[in-house]
Image (cartoon, each protein chain N blue to C red):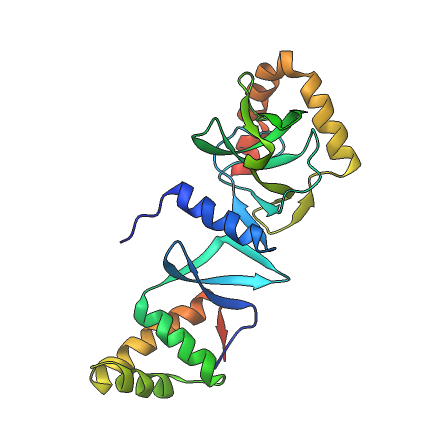
Length: 151
Length: 90
């Protein structure tokens, strides 16, 4: 059996995005909680255009790995990202290293929810402000809601 | 039988895969990997449009050095898998 690395799969997805395709891509891990549930939900990726703070993107960060995280600042060509489900730590890349823009979160039932509806944008801004107490909210979320939806 | 619309054979990461493709969308969570022979059969079925096990088995015998019985058995297995996956229909 041929083993295909994650990076190779991601690069193929990016090539299709660059062809103008919309690619539905499964998300791993819990670094985008509570907005994207890894190993359960996917995101729809498109060509990155008009990038703004608050956008969720697939990017090649720190010159060594791909992440799907939210943009928290853009200064010239420099982009800083952070996972919604992280309590510390940011990643850096350039605008050119942003490979795709996530436009929808896709539930296991196949429903596509726009990531940038007014209430989701407001919720993500509020979530950013809650960073100092995110640790406790996430712990509660993982022990309650996440267990319910994972059943 | 015929292939359902929207399922396309592509090469992803050097592998033959069938992807659900519609409205310019590819779902990487729903890729179906095919070996060389299966990919050839999928292309053949696509060319035929309306196909059945006998037609595909005959084509397989012409292309590969395989007995009619073995071809029929392999194609039946393959077609049943495609039916189970819902990528072809009667």
